[in-house]
Length: 106
Image: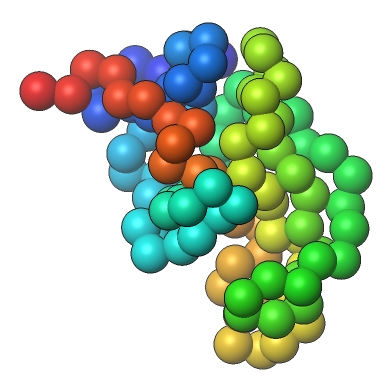
């Protein structure tokens, strides 16, 4: 899927479009490789199998997320949160900043 407009994030490996800037919910997340963004949605990704993973904020069911074009691991999707305070993450994506590049930024 091609995203039209300014401020697009794409895969750093193959430049496939992944999200618009407006999809960012929070910039204060951390992934395996450092800073990451919590995003409302991503396009052009493949979601892997779900697994329970103990993260900084507790136990979650997550699924790794890959670029559909080059299969680079981008981050993960929250499938389930076991603590009430973490429910806002369910259905959202964490995408590592080092896996993204910017397109059409002024």
